[in-house]
Amino acid sequence: MSDSVSSSRRWLGRVAAVAIVVAIAQPAFAKPHSRKLDRALARVAESGGHQARVIVRFRPGQESAVTDALRRSNASFRYRHASISALTVDVDAGDLDTIADLDGVESVSYDAPVDALDTTATIPNTDGDGLRAAVGVVNTGFSGKGVGVAVIDSGISPLPEFNRRIKAFYDFTRGGIATSPFDDYGHGTHVAGLLGGGYPGGGDQVGVAASVSLIVMKVLDAHGRGTTSDVINAIDFAIAKKTALGINIINLSLGHVPYESATTDPLVQAVDRASAAGIIVVVAAGNAGVNPSTGQPGYGGVLSPGNARSAITVGSEHSMGTQTRGDDIVGAYSSRGPTWYDSYAKPDVVAPGHRLLAPVSTTSQLLIENPALKLVVWHGPTYLSLTGTSMSAAVVSGTVALMLEANRATFGSTATLTPNAVKAMLQFSAIPLRDPSGILYDQMTQGTGSLNGDGAMKLARAVNPSTPVGSYWLTMGVAPVSTIANLAQPWAQNIIWGDNIVWGDTVYTNIPAWSTNVVWGENVVWGENLVWGDNIVWGENIVWSTNIIWSTNIVWGENVVWGENLVWGENVVWGESRDENVIWGESTVDSIR
Image (cartoon, rainbow, N blue to C red):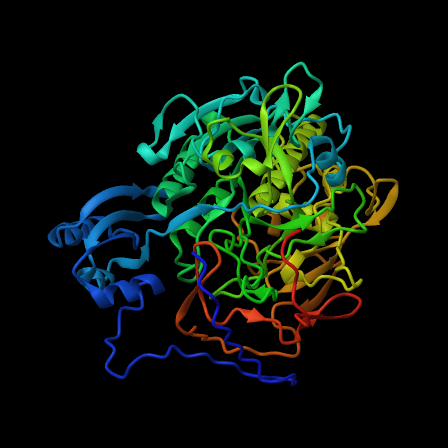
């Protein structure tokens, strides 16, 4: 669906401190609903008279009491999600407030539909060779061997490019049964191809890490749609089977509109649990970065679970079909931060995601719907050219697989880089991008910059993860510059921690921030050789109320239900970069091309 956007701009002028409060316009007689209901369910509760599928999170020690209460309300039980202490049930909409008000209930959330995050465009295709050259991972000597990636998506077709590397396949649209691999939509196959496709015996490598093991969990149907509860079940399974299946990375090229804070969002909670278990979770930021009616850039469009602080959230970069970085721009549609409700700084980095070629089955729905994007290569398989943050996330997952293999090759097979350490390396080594007019993109658009596989690999080969906490863990000198397409590219040399830019030798020491029991952005003890930059979410020029209540939803784009107050244009000044004030939104952004 593609209803027009009702533009609601609440820009109150450029002043030293402006408090902005947006209130929901509700009739005086509107019945207040439990604060434990998310925004979508608060509306559902108004109607009553029909069933609603919800995810009920219970407090410690309260599962039995909550389960008994749900049975008394004639709830139909579907799933138990151990990792986030939750149950997915079907209940009458009229009972939502009663359920939410139970003492043992933490929150009640909509079992939101999730979608694959791809789109189409009409720009030059980028093949495997061009992709790896653009990322900076040509001739590294590593291919992701021994690294397991869980692709939670629409499935995977057992094509020659995967050469018996599909280690396991589970269909969570049918309860998580183990079955033969298939992909009736095609999105998961394309993602897996970018991440780790390689044509056997042909000397041709499709994706970034052609030797990874693929553990595939189907959660999306033949139309690229699924449910939050199925995704949570797949994540729970990946956590439980981490050791048995050798899962090191989870790729989530899917998402849904956030209906509540990340602190209660069930999908975010599942991602946080996976990260705490030592699994590196890579997530697509979303394709909600541009107003489809006006072409203006929008801020605050990061989807769930891209709003999980523990995840590596990836935006999309347009490499222009070249290997150089000087002409690269951030994709107009790529979702920008800060995150809805919580104002977290996202994305973490951007990566190539425009018109990337990867294989799909000839019977996949994506191919049937997009015949103009088909390319039949000389090997025989059919390749599809897709664009979106889904593709970008896959590229980052492949790069992380190379990093893990390189680290193990240097420091032993038991070497373990934590999710936070990997994210720090990616951010620190990223290459900042500028828009076509030469202005540095703000951090809400590009994170710290563009994925730099060369720099990330250098750090992975130098960092000894067995070094005691508090000690310098680089085992060799690392120059913070990479040569890509014969041009020297300086690294960002900073990370974004919470609302602040942190400069200095953050990644050169094994500090407490890199441990698995620390959520990215939390208060931790840092070393002495750091320089704290500006608060990048709101900066010095705008102070938002801490209790923003967003007004009524609108509908725009493809299946995106959103609030009215995404920030569209209006010359917003938002924090400062290292070398200049960041100003954006003065002009419209062209459609993808």
